[in-house]
Image (tube, rainbow, N blue to C red; front, side, top):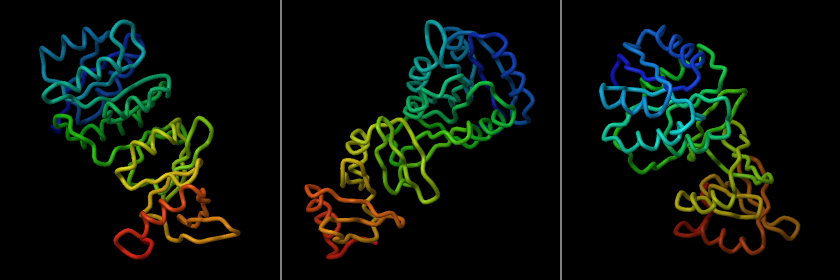
Length: 244
C-alpha cells in the first residue's frame, strides 16, 4: 500500500458523502479523494484511475456496497475496502469480504483517521485462503477484529455465541454449529452442546461428581458423556498426556 492514498468515497446520500470526503481529505497521507453516489459510478471511476482505498456505504439502491465489494475482490489488485454504514448487521459479511475496517454512522473524525491508518498498514495482494480468519466484534460502538487464534473457547447463548479470549469475552451473532464445522481443522472440538474449545488451551481434564470437566483459563467446562471419549482421544493422541 502506497504512503500517499488515492481514496474513493461511495455513498448515495450527498450530505454523508460530502462530510466523509471532507474528513478524509484533512488527513496527511491522503493525496486525493473522489466522491460518487452509486456503485455504477464507482466502477466507472475505478476503470479510469488508480484507487488505493474505497470507503463504501452498504445500503445503496441498485448495486449495494456488499455487491460492489464482491466485484472489487475479483480485481487483480483490489483496493482496500472500508465499509461505512448506519447498521452493524452486516459486520460478519464485511469480515468475509476481507474488509479493512467497518465504520458506523455517524462517523467521527478519530475513527476515520484510524481507518486510514489501517488502510496504510494493509497489504492487499490477490485474494488467498485465510489461515487465521478474524471475527468482527462490537466494543462500545467500535468494531474490533478478533483473530481465531485468540479464541480459547466458545460458549453458546441462544442465537449468539460468546467468544472467550485471553483478555475478555465478546458476544457475536454466530452459530456454534457453524463454528464447530468451520474451525475443526484449527483444533477446536465440541465438548458439549454449549461449548466449543480450542484443545491447546485445555490445562486439565478431570472427573468431578461423576462427570468430566475441562479447565480453560480457570473456567470449568462440562464435557458431555458422548463427547468425553473423543476428547480424551484427541488430548492423549501422540503425547500420552493432555496438552498444556
